[in-house]
Image (tube, rainbow, N blue to C red; front, top):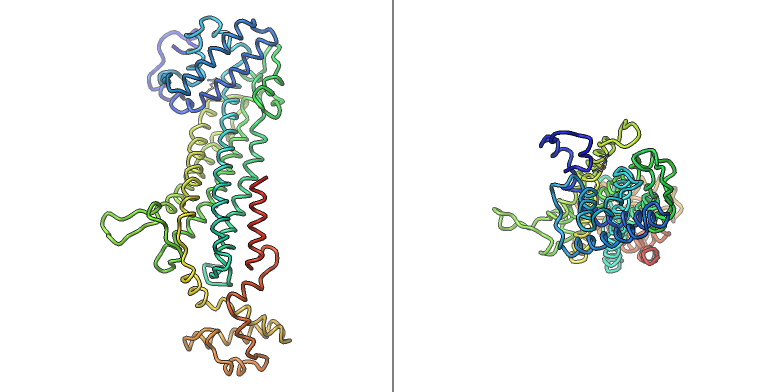
Length: 457
Ligand code: ARG
């Protein structure tokens, strides 16, 4: 029987029931639904809208339901319309008439808005904790590779020398910004909508501020029409998670490339690799391919809700029910991705010798060669031209800047002396890039310390 059965005669169509029901997914919010009702019932009793004894009976009944949900003693009735209906029905079954007073001054429209905000706030905390864990893994890996020279790339072409520590910490920086965005999103999510009623508030003298305090929200919503129909906080979370997944997909792509035999910068531990059913030699980085692939789902979830919200007239419309599956999918996907990447990184074996070999082949010290000439008084543009000729000479003769004879250098420019070899040594090239934010080991160590300090806050 539906809550609203009084208005209708006759049964509702089975297919409409299937379309309309949300219990299949909104039962995830059952704890929040009960907690919200506990606050509402407490306040109703305090202001005298219902009697103290009814309020007490409701609170005790709801606590019993909550305990049974947590212990698994109470199975969810999947024929109920939604989680709100289920909890209210169960309460009335347990405590009788007092249960029928719980919904006084409330609508499922403000109730569901409250439930989602509470649920998301808890999930934001979880996502932040998981992001911090991945940042910690980045810091740990980086500390072991402050001196691991590798090529930095632009256009995926070897460009200038950096270190693995510096590379990994670039991803830690992205994740720190993700945490910042999630924290900001949580602040707006914790605005309390109860008291908005179906759309036009209520005639009962509800103490909205009291419910806000009981539930630990920051403020109450200031317009009842907006209170029931606003999902900006949900869109913000989906946007934040889309950006987070974009970061994880970039990191995943690096790992996929680095696992290839062409690069072999890293080998993933067996626990985080898969094989092929036909090719016995294969060890595949499915984990990072999946994270890369799943990024599209989260973008899709954002577009789903943006589209559901587009051109919605005030106030509540059933389209809003479509928010939940998109949110849950995005949260699950982002959480699982974060959960697998941290231990994958911690157990991965990097190959500094292959990184160094790649760094040695790409003329990534050519800028340093030019800078050396600049230090000898040659204008940069001329130094650039001379170095370019030397690189061409190396490419043609199969040499590197390191193996080129001093004679060859001096033929190109009288300004060269034996100091050039020290100047183009890859580790020296990295060490000289010691500005704040640079790849020099001391600069990266400072970066790691700053990040770890932020994590402690
Ligand atoms: N299941 C609904 C949702 O998720 C709850 C609100 C229903 N309100 C209504 N007037 N039918 O949005």
